[in-house]
Length: 368
Ligand SMILES: Cc1ncc(COP(=O)(O)O)c(C=O)c1O
Image (cartoon, rainbow, N blue to C red; front, side):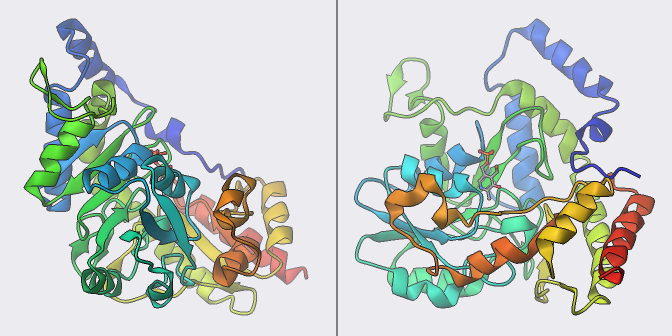
Protein backbone atom coordinates (compact mmCIF):
# COMPACT_ATOMS: atom_id res chain seq x y z
CA UNK A 1 0.00 0.00 0.00
CA UNK A 2 1.15 3.57 -0.63
CA UNK A 3 0.14 6.31 1.79
CA UNK A 4 1.02 9.67 0.26
CA UNK A 5 1.49 12.92 2.11
CA UNK A 6 -0.21 15.19 -0.42
CA UNK A 7 -3.96 14.71 -0.76
CA UNK A 8 -4.51 17.54 -3.23
CA UNK A 9 -5.38 15.38 -6.22
CA UNK A 10 -8.02 13.67 -4.10
CA UNK A 11 -9.33 16.93 -2.72
CA UNK A 12 -9.75 18.57 -6.11
CA UNK A 13 -10.68 15.49 -8.14
CA UNK A 14 -13.96 17.16 -9.14
CA UNK A 15 -13.14 20.81 -9.73
CA UNK A 16 -16.04 21.66 -12.08
CA UNK A 17 -18.01 23.76 -9.58
CA UNK A 18 -14.98 25.96 -8.93
CA UNK A 19 -14.01 26.15 -12.60
CA UNK A 20 -17.54 27.27 -13.49
CA UNK A 21 -17.22 30.21 -11.10
CA UNK A 22 -13.79 31.08 -12.41
CA UNK A 23 -15.20 31.00 -15.95
CA UNK A 24 -17.94 33.42 -14.86
CA UNK A 25 -15.36 35.73 -13.27
CA UNK A 26 -13.19 35.77 -16.39
CA UNK A 27 -16.06 37.22 -18.42
CA UNK A 28 -16.51 40.10 -15.91
CA UNK A 29 -12.91 41.33 -16.18
CA UNK A 30 -12.86 42.08 -12.41
CA UNK A 31 -9.62 40.32 -11.58
CA UNK A 32 -8.52 42.15 -8.42
CA UNK A 33 -10.47 42.29 -5.12
CA UNK A 34 -14.23 42.49 -5.88
CA UNK A 35 -17.24 40.50 -4.64
CA UNK A 36 -15.53 37.08 -4.42
CA UNK A 37 -12.88 38.47 -2.05
CA UNK A 38 -15.52 40.29 0.02
CA UNK A 39 -17.65 37.16 0.26
CA UNK A 40 -14.64 35.14 1.36
CA UNK A 41 -13.65 37.71 3.97
CA UNK A 42 -17.16 37.75 5.42
CA UNK A 43 -17.39 33.96 5.50
CA UNK A 44 -13.96 33.73 7.13
CA UNK A 45 -14.79 36.32 9.80
CA UNK A 46 -18.09 34.68 10.61
CA UNK A 47 -16.53 31.17 10.74
CA UNK A 48 -14.06 32.44 13.33
CA UNK A 49 -16.51 34.73 15.13
CA UNK A 50 -14.32 37.81 14.69
CA UNK A 51 -15.25 41.29 13.45
CA UNK A 52 -12.90 41.68 10.48
CA UNK A 53 -11.04 39.43 8.03
CA UNK A 54 -8.71 40.92 5.43
CA UNK A 55 -7.59 38.80 2.48
CA UNK A 56 -3.88 39.16 1.64
CA UNK A 57 -1.38 37.50 -0.69
CA UNK A 58 -0.06 34.81 1.69
CA UNK A 59 0.45 33.92 5.36
CA UNK A 60 3.88 35.50 5.51
CA UNK A 61 2.45 38.85 4.40
CA UNK A 62 -0.40 38.38 6.87
CA UNK A 63 2.19 38.36 9.68
CA UNK A 64 4.36 41.12 8.24
CA UNK A 65 1.41 43.45 7.57
CA UNK A 66 0.00 42.79 11.05
CA UNK A 67 3.29 43.96 12.59
CA UNK A 68 3.42 46.97 10.24
CA UNK A 69 -0.17 47.92 11.11
CA UNK A 70 0.81 47.91 14.78
CA UNK A 71 3.66 50.30 14.00
CA UNK A 72 6.36 47.69 14.67
CA UNK A 73 9.57 47.96 12.64
CA UNK A 74 13.17 49.17 12.74
CA UNK A 75 14.76 49.01 16.20
CA UNK A 76 11.97 46.86 17.67
CA UNK A 77 12.12 43.26 18.86
CA UNK A 78 9.43 40.62 18.46
CA UNK A 79 9.46 37.44 20.54
CA UNK A 80 8.46 34.22 18.81
CA UNK A 81 8.86 30.43 19.01
CA UNK A 82 12.22 28.78 18.31
CA UNK A 83 10.40 25.96 16.54
CA UNK A 84 8.22 27.18 13.69
CA UNK A 85 8.16 27.35 9.92
CA UNK A 86 10.79 29.86 8.79
CA UNK A 87 8.14 32.29 7.49
CA UNK A 88 7.29 33.42 11.04
CA UNK A 89 10.81 34.66 11.59
CA UNK A 90 11.13 35.93 8.01
CA UNK A 91 7.99 38.04 8.42
CA UNK A 92 9.35 39.71 11.57
CA UNK A 93 12.54 40.56 9.75
CA UNK A 94 10.62 41.75 6.67
CA UNK A 95 8.74 44.17 8.94
CA UNK A 96 12.15 45.58 9.89
CA UNK A 97 12.17 44.23 13.47
CA UNK A 98 14.54 41.78 15.16
CA UNK A 99 13.20 38.25 15.80
CA UNK A 100 13.96 37.06 19.34
CA UNK A 101 13.48 33.30 19.71
CA UNK A 102 12.20 31.52 22.81
CA UNK A 103 12.10 27.76 23.35
CA UNK A 104 8.88 25.78 23.00
CA UNK A 105 6.78 23.42 25.11
CA UNK A 106 6.60 19.64 24.44
CA UNK A 107 3.38 20.48 22.53
CA UNK A 108 5.37 22.64 20.11
CA UNK A 109 4.24 26.15 21.08
CA UNK A 110 5.94 29.17 22.63
CA UNK A 111 6.73 28.40 26.28
CA UNK A 112 5.27 31.23 28.43
CA UNK A 113 7.63 30.40 31.31
CA UNK A 114 10.60 31.37 29.14
CA UNK A 115 9.26 34.60 27.65
CA UNK A 116 9.92 37.01 30.53
CA UNK A 117 13.71 36.76 30.39
CA UNK A 118 13.68 37.47 26.63
CA UNK A 119 11.87 40.81 27.08
CA UNK A 120 14.02 43.93 26.67
CA UNK A 121 13.14 47.64 26.46
CA UNK A 122 12.98 47.16 22.66
CA UNK A 123 10.39 44.35 22.78
CA UNK A 124 7.14 45.44 21.13
CA UNK A 125 5.21 42.22 20.55
CA UNK A 126 4.86 38.54 21.36
CA UNK A 127 4.10 36.35 18.37
CA UNK A 128 2.91 32.87 19.46
CA UNK A 129 2.65 30.21 16.75
CA UNK A 130 -0.16 27.69 16.91
CA UNK A 131 2.06 25.05 15.36
CA UNK A 132 0.54 21.83 13.96
CA UNK A 133 -2.97 23.14 14.72
CA UNK A 134 -2.44 22.99 18.51
CA UNK A 135 -2.86 26.29 20.38
CA UNK A 136 -0.25 28.15 22.41
CA UNK A 137 -0.91 28.90 26.11
CA UNK A 138 -2.75 32.11 25.28
CA UNK A 139 -3.95 32.96 28.78
CA UNK A 140 -0.42 33.17 30.16
CA UNK A 141 0.90 34.88 27.02
CA UNK A 142 -1.84 37.51 26.98
CA UNK A 143 -1.45 38.20 30.67
CA UNK A 144 2.29 38.69 30.31
CA UNK A 145 1.82 40.88 27.23
CA UNK A 146 -0.73 43.06 28.95
CA UNK A 147 1.47 43.48 32.09
CA UNK A 148 4.41 44.53 29.93
CA UNK A 149 2.43 46.65 27.43
CA UNK A 150 3.20 44.38 24.47
CA UNK A 151 1.04 43.56 21.46
CA UNK A 152 0.11 39.96 20.68
CA UNK A 153 0.07 38.83 17.05
CA UNK A 154 -0.93 35.20 16.51
CA UNK A 155 0.57 33.01 13.82
CA UNK A 156 -2.48 30.85 13.21
CA UNK A 157 -1.28 29.79 9.74
CA UNK A 158 -1.59 26.12 10.72
CA UNK A 159 -4.59 26.44 13.01
CA UNK A 160 -7.77 27.53 11.27
CA UNK A 161 -10.70 26.31 13.35
CA UNK A 162 -8.63 25.44 16.42
CA UNK A 163 -9.98 26.81 19.70
CA UNK A 164 -8.62 27.58 23.15
CA UNK A 165 -11.26 27.29 25.87
CA UNK A 166 -13.85 28.26 23.27
CA UNK A 167 -11.91 31.14 21.74
CA UNK A 168 -10.67 30.91 18.16
CA UNK A 169 -6.96 30.55 17.40
CA UNK A 170 -6.08 33.79 15.64
CA UNK A 171 -8.88 35.72 17.33
CA UNK A 172 -7.27 36.27 20.73
CA UNK A 173 -4.53 38.79 19.89
CA UNK A 174 -4.50 42.22 18.25
CA UNK A 175 -4.24 40.40 14.90
CA UNK A 176 -4.18 36.77 13.78
CA UNK A 177 -2.51 35.56 10.59
CA UNK A 178 -3.63 32.63 8.44
CA UNK A 179 -2.18 30.89 5.40
CA UNK A 180 -4.22 29.37 2.57
CA UNK A 181 -1.21 27.51 1.13
CA UNK A 182 -2.17 24.24 -0.63
CA UNK A 183 -1.14 22.01 2.28
CA UNK A 184 -3.03 23.96 4.94
CA UNK A 185 -6.43 22.80 6.24
CA UNK A 186 -8.12 25.57 4.22
CA UNK A 187 -6.14 25.44 1.01
CA UNK A 188 -6.44 27.28 -2.27
CA UNK A 189 -4.85 26.67 -5.69
CA UNK A 190 -1.68 28.62 -4.96
CA UNK A 191 -0.97 31.24 -2.34
CA UNK A 192 -3.33 33.21 -0.14
CA UNK A 193 -3.53 34.58 3.37
CA UNK A 194 -5.93 36.23 5.80
CA UNK A 195 -5.54 38.62 8.73
CA UNK A 196 -8.26 38.78 11.36
CA UNK A 197 -8.79 41.47 13.97
CA UNK A 198 -11.56 42.79 16.19
CA UNK A 199 -10.12 46.31 16.08
CA UNK A 200 -11.79 48.67 13.60
CA UNK A 201 -8.76 50.98 13.28
CA UNK A 202 -6.42 48.05 12.58
CA UNK A 203 -8.88 46.70 10.03
CA UNK A 204 -8.82 50.01 8.16
CA UNK A 205 -5.06 50.28 8.27
CA UNK A 206 -4.58 46.69 7.09
CA UNK A 207 -6.92 47.25 4.14
CA UNK A 208 -4.80 50.25 3.14
CA UNK A 209 -1.50 48.43 3.68
CA UNK A 210 -2.47 45.48 1.45
CA UNK A 211 -3.37 47.75 -1.48
CA UNK A 212 -0.68 50.45 -1.84
CA UNK A 213 -2.32 52.65 0.78
CA UNK A 214 -4.92 53.58 -1.83
CA UNK A 215 -8.05 55.31 -0.60
CA UNK A 216 -10.36 55.28 -3.57
CA UNK A 217 -8.61 55.58 -6.92
CA UNK A 218 -6.48 58.67 -6.52
CA UNK A 219 -5.56 59.21 -2.90
CA UNK A 220 -2.65 57.62 -1.06
CA UNK A 221 -3.34 57.52 2.67
CA UNK A 222 -0.04 55.79 3.52
CA UNK A 223 2.72 53.93 1.74
CA UNK A 224 1.64 50.32 1.49
CA UNK A 225 2.23 47.10 -0.43
CA UNK A 226 0.69 45.01 -3.16
CA UNK A 227 -0.58 42.10 -1.08
CA UNK A 228 -4.16 41.50 -2.12
CA UNK A 229 -5.78 38.08 -1.89
CA UNK A 230 -6.04 36.95 -5.51
CA UNK A 231 -9.66 36.95 -6.69
CA UNK A 232 -9.33 33.51 -8.32
CA UNK A 233 -8.07 32.11 -5.02
CA UNK A 234 -10.99 33.73 -3.20
CA UNK A 235 -13.32 31.73 -5.45
CA UNK A 236 -11.55 28.51 -4.44
CA UNK A 237 -11.65 29.70 -0.82
CA UNK A 238 -15.40 30.32 -0.96
CA UNK A 239 -15.97 26.78 -2.16
CA UNK A 240 -13.72 25.39 0.57
CA UNK A 241 -15.25 27.38 3.43
CA UNK A 242 -18.33 25.17 3.17
CA UNK A 243 -16.15 22.06 3.52
CA UNK A 244 -13.92 23.36 6.32
CA UNK A 245 -15.88 21.99 9.32
CA UNK A 246 -15.80 18.53 7.75
CA UNK A 247 -12.10 18.83 6.81
CA UNK A 248 -11.16 19.69 10.40
CA UNK A 249 -13.42 17.02 11.90
CA UNK A 250 -11.92 14.27 9.74
CA UNK A 251 -8.42 15.31 10.78
CA UNK A 252 -9.49 15.35 14.44
CA UNK A 253 -11.02 11.85 14.06
CA UNK A 254 -7.88 10.48 12.37
CA UNK A 255 -5.73 11.97 15.12
CA UNK A 256 -7.98 10.48 17.85
CA UNK A 257 -7.58 7.02 16.30
CA UNK A 258 -3.80 7.46 16.11
CA UNK A 259 -3.76 8.66 19.74
CA UNK A 260 -5.43 5.43 20.88
CA UNK A 261 -3.11 3.20 18.84
CA UNK A 262 0.10 5.08 19.60
CA UNK A 263 -0.84 5.69 23.23
CA UNK A 264 -0.66 1.90 23.67
CA UNK A 265 2.95 1.85 22.43
CA UNK A 266 4.57 3.61 25.38
CA UNK A 267 8.31 3.09 25.45
CA UNK A 268 8.51 3.30 21.66
CA UNK A 269 6.22 6.26 21.02
CA UNK A 270 5.15 9.16 23.23
CA UNK A 271 2.23 11.43 22.46
CA UNK A 272 2.69 15.16 22.95
CA UNK A 273 0.74 16.36 26.04
CA UNK A 274 -2.94 16.82 25.16
CA UNK A 275 -4.17 19.72 27.30
CA UNK A 276 -7.89 19.90 28.12
CA UNK A 277 -10.02 22.74 26.73
CA UNK A 278 -8.20 22.86 23.41
CA UNK A 279 -9.58 21.84 20.05
CA UNK A 280 -6.60 20.89 17.88
CA UNK A 281 -7.20 20.77 14.15
CA UNK A 282 -4.16 18.64 13.28
CA UNK A 283 -2.62 20.45 10.38
CA UNK A 284 0.16 17.98 11.27
CA UNK A 285 0.10 14.84 13.38
CA UNK A 286 3.40 14.45 15.21
CA UNK A 287 4.53 11.89 17.74
CA UNK A 288 7.79 11.38 19.65
CA UNK A 289 9.49 8.21 18.42
CA UNK A 290 12.36 6.08 19.70
CA UNK A 291 14.92 5.49 16.93
CA UNK A 292 13.14 8.18 14.94
CA UNK A 293 15.48 8.22 11.96
CA UNK A 294 15.36 4.43 11.49
CA UNK A 295 11.55 4.48 11.82
CA UNK A 296 11.37 7.27 9.23
CA UNK A 297 13.45 5.28 6.71
CA UNK A 298 11.41 2.14 7.41
CA UNK A 299 8.09 3.91 6.80
CA UNK A 300 9.33 5.40 3.54
CA UNK A 301 10.45 1.94 2.41
CA UNK A 302 6.93 0.62 3.21
CA UNK A 303 5.37 3.28 0.98
CA UNK A 304 4.31 5.63 3.80
CA UNK A 305 5.29 9.19 3.11
CA UNK A 306 6.16 10.26 6.65
CA UNK A 307 7.88 13.64 7.18
CA UNK A 308 10.17 15.31 9.68
CA UNK A 309 9.21 18.75 10.95
CA UNK A 310 11.93 20.01 11.29
CA UNK A 311 15.21 18.07 10.99
CA UNK A 312 17.38 21.16 11.54
CA UNK A 313 16.28 23.38 14.45
CA UNK A 314 15.43 26.79 13.01
CA UNK A 315 17.87 28.80 15.19
CA UNK A 316 20.73 26.62 13.88
CA UNK A 317 19.92 27.16 10.21
CA UNK A 318 22.63 28.92 8.16
CA UNK A 319 20.19 31.61 7.03
CA UNK A 320 19.55 32.65 10.64
CA UNK A 321 23.21 32.73 11.71
CA UNK A 322 23.04 36.54 12.02
CA UNK A 323 20.69 36.11 15.01
CA UNK A 324 23.65 34.63 16.91
CA UNK A 325 22.10 31.49 18.40
CA UNK A 326 24.10 28.34 19.11
CA UNK A 327 23.47 24.67 19.87
CA UNK A 328 22.15 24.26 23.42
CA UNK A 329 20.21 27.55 23.42
CA UNK A 330 16.87 25.83 22.75
CA UNK A 331 16.97 22.33 24.30
CA UNK A 332 13.32 21.50 23.68
CA UNK A 333 13.34 22.57 20.01
CA UNK A 334 16.57 20.60 19.54
CA UNK A 335 15.10 17.51 21.22
CA UNK A 336 12.05 17.72 18.96
CA UNK A 337 14.21 17.92 15.84
CA UNK A 338 15.71 14.52 16.65
CA UNK A 339 12.66 12.73 18.02
CA UNK A 340 9.45 13.86 16.26
CA UNK A 341 7.95 12.13 13.26
CA UNK A 342 4.96 13.31 11.21
CA UNK A 343 2.51 10.83 9.67
CA UNK A 344 -0.34 11.59 7.23
CA UNK A 345 -3.54 12.73 9.01
CA UNK A 346 -5.39 14.53 6.21
CA UNK A 347 -9.13 14.45 5.61
CA UNK A 348 -8.76 12.00 2.69
CA UNK A 349 -6.77 9.39 4.59
CA UNK A 350 -8.86 6.20 4.56
CA UNK A 351 -9.27 4.01 7.63
CA UNK A 352 -7.34 1.25 5.75
CA UNK A 353 -4.44 3.64 5.14
CA UNK A 354 -4.48 4.78 8.75
CA UNK A 355 -4.49 1.15 9.95
CA UNK A 356 -1.55 0.41 7.62
CA UNK A 357 0.47 3.29 9.12
CA UNK A 358 -0.20 1.93 12.64
CA UNK A 359 0.58 -1.63 11.59
CA UNK A 360 3.88 -0.67 9.96
CA UNK A 361 4.97 1.27 13.05
CA UNK A 362 4.08 -1.71 15.24
CA UNK A 363 6.00 -4.03 12.93
CA UNK A 364 9.03 -1.75 13.02
CA UNK A 365 9.23 -1.83 16.82
CA UNK A 366 8.22 -5.50 17.00
CA UNK A 367 11.25 -6.40 14.90
CA UNK A 368 13.73 -4.57 17.11
C1 LIG B 1 3.58 28.50 11.03
C2 LIG B 1 3.56 29.17 9.69
N1 LIG B 1 3.73 30.51 9.62
C3 LIG B 1 3.70 31.16 8.46
C4 LIG B 1 3.50 30.48 7.25
C5 LIG B 1 3.53 31.26 6.00
O1 LIG B 1 2.43 31.08 5.18
P1 LIG B 1 2.57 31.25 3.61
O2 LIG B 1 3.28 30.04 3.06
O3 LIG B 1 1.14 31.33 3.15
O4 LIG B 1 3.31 32.52 3.35
C6 LIG B 1 3.30 29.09 7.28
C7 LIG B 1 3.04 28.29 6.10
O5 LIG B 1 3.63 28.20 5.10
C8 LIG B 1 3.36 28.41 8.52
O6 LIG B 1 3.22 27.09 8.58
